[in-house]
Length: 214
Image (cartoon, helix red, strand yellow):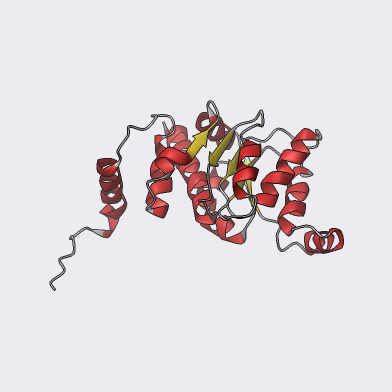
């Protein structure tokens, strides 16, 4: 069997990928959310995100504006943290945080019998900063954010990106976020992941960086 590979220059691979995605999409995308959805599909090769990514009104615009004003990002995994374009984030005045490996977080989680992700969200909220929460793995992180919000202990989030993947409490945790009166981007259903969380942050960063130049 002869296999012929397309000849594409390295610098053109992403642009060509986006062309393919656009050509295979079955439904038109909302222009405001298009960059995020395209980046999600580009990262995962999963067209379901064109349907399952759910946006609160103005979520993308609000996330971009927050980044332009120096908002920082907190993740629930080191994988999501490593995938975020920190060069662009730092240029906009923001920082990237992850507290999973923090010894105090680990000890508190052990003492209380909860996940590190749960304590990480408490640690992040206590920073008192304008934060984008990018959650791609732990539904317990989303549940704790919801609880903190209900308790009045969560400084208003710039944006919650709720895209954990899995089977236990994943769908339910995402639905809790969709009841919150704050900006959110949620991948409804079981699909998601740390790579998706990072991809969504990067889509917002690239849009913010472009807007800053213009």
